[in-house]
Image (tube, rainbow, N blue to C red; front, top):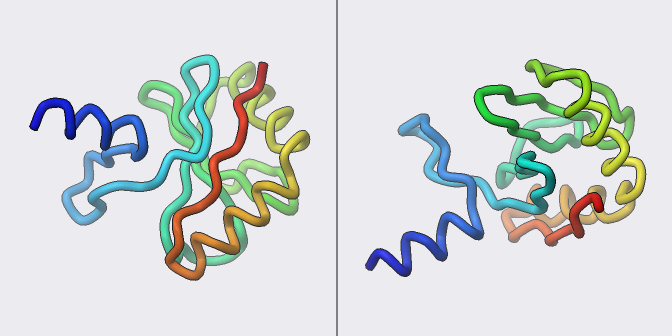
Amino acid sequence: MIGENQRLRELFLIHPSPRILCMPKISQFFGIVIYMYFRDHAPPHFHAQYGEFEGLIGIDSRTLIQGNLPPRVLGLVMEWASLYSKELSKSWEAASKGSPPHKIPPLK
């Protein structure tokens, strides 16, 4: 059972809110976890978590829609989003239909 829990933590971000069980991780780099909810509200966006900070980032606008991230972290997230904008759109499309979003390579 412990092995299964570890496997789930590698695939999903376990959200602290009891109403949200998990959100698929689509990428992770430099301590930043990127994830998407299934069937989330518009506009197309993804979530970035870094420690106690969390931000909601617009896929098309590449702007911080909601939340707070340290400036350096936000810069890394925006750089990653610019590199993988097409992949993010495909992941959003899949997640909006209830399918698992696609994994996206990390920023190196």
